[in-house]
Image (cartoon, rainbow, N blue to C red; front, side, top):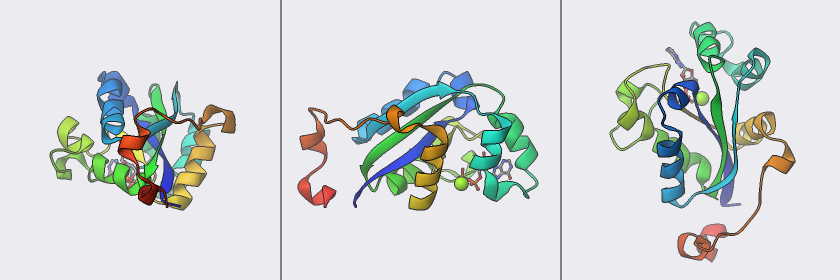
Length: 156
Ligand code: IDP
Ligand code: MG
């Protein structure tokens, strides 16, 4: 299926810096649909599940401290190839390496405090969305603008 859903997190640094709106706007302007959106705090238990592949890494402790330091905004973003499109919009992991025009390349200079998370593939997207959203928190709806943003070919 060409229409995908992905988990985007606006990390605590993005919330502290007042960038929720600026970041959400980028996804909306791209034509992607917001299927879920909420402010929440990541617990250590959720961090351990979400970042399970990173538990052995040297930066893990600092990452969890950062991600649990304050509220974050969780989004489910939907659209054609949404997983890859969102990752490209975010830019490379370290803001210093991210191209201008990307979220990390426009808004940050840090390695770890890099403003956003985006699922890195279909399996991760499915797993991570289930960690952050209950089924009833995700919405299927059509928008007036959808006909001008997504064609039958894009959906196929
Ligand atoms: P990604 O977020 O671009 O997918 P990952 O390699 O999955 O990058 O790392 C997850 C998160 O861990 C990064 O977004 C970043 O916040 C943090 N991180 C990764 N490597 C480092 C590091 O070397 N120092 C500090 N934080 C790091
Ligand atoms: Mg990752």
